[in-house]
Length: 500
Image (cartoon, rainbow, N blue to C red; front, side, top):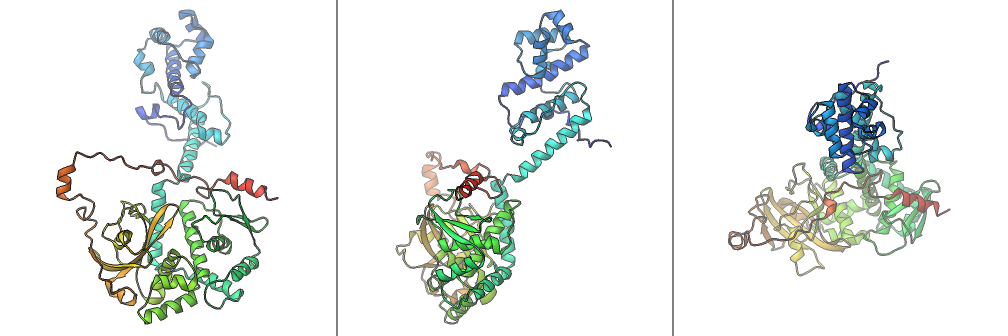
């Protein structure tokens, strides 16, 4: 059987001078390249190592070290060798490979020195003059495949944005409503005897017990986790600390959601995001059950008194959780299209959802996370509101139409955030706060709206200011690798082992 042949490396400078993924020292890589050129020139001259030794006095072992890249030749020695072989120094030190064979050997030797090879503990092979070309090509084909898989597994910020774009499109298509998850939550609530109102701690304990799990609060939960589930012993570990931005009830129900929804270890970052959305939804469907929540919202709509804060208070959840839940139910059950935003005090979108035609700022991939929101929108104006206890409402004219929005702010470890729900003008009549006198006009994405400085300011300061940007190195970094991005698996396994 003939071994599969990799495509021949192009005879261009990039093939010969292709950098190793990670080289111990740059000079060693240069020595490898030079060594291939030296050996090729000697072979072309038809000389053995002993013949070179006899001609210029360099020991065969020294010459072999030069040719294998294990020793570096001095300039004077290179001059001697170039003269002996009848070649110019530029031929020995140039960027073009002396032969296709030399390029193959160099690529494979560099690959065997890379961190990827070492991390996978792959055995190295000795490349000799009798090693067939097709063996080198087959090995390089395997190297290329390993590198391709490694590249796919590195979740770059662009990959995360693309995965978010795809998920947001799916959620828009289904109006952010997941009937199958609602059904799972409803069945679970029926089994434990839920009737109405907020989900009590007693019923949460009953759900946990019915699923065969026990809850353990600890003070040394791995720092990179919100919870750890021990599937061996059916234990869920939660932090004992009260200093957290997450509702402990929701964290527990999300952990149970992975089990109920049959999640497997995510194969990629898109699957990881999807699982997170599904478990968040499952927890919300338990804390604010569909049947009772829809009844509550329908009654409020009939009275034209819909309000996120009322849903929050009725089910004893956070404002953010109530706003999210409204996006799950408003279109599917009340016929109201809407949009949701979570915006940092810096003006950057952290989370957003829409099915009402509003135009969010987006990059070339369609991603909206990380994009600055127009300063005229409610989600930005709320930060300047004097009243931080009650909701801030505003009508905003935009190129996509006029929207009524309501917003509140909440503080977290990452700073202050605005949480806003908005609807097209025609649907504002169902909401409390529709009588607001606050008005704003946004021309975004036209830069003249709020991104381009006014003419008088630009005239006075253009070229006279040099701000030091608050750039964060994590913006350039790949997202944390692993099946569960950002989680230190060694720390998690050590934690579980210490529970014995």
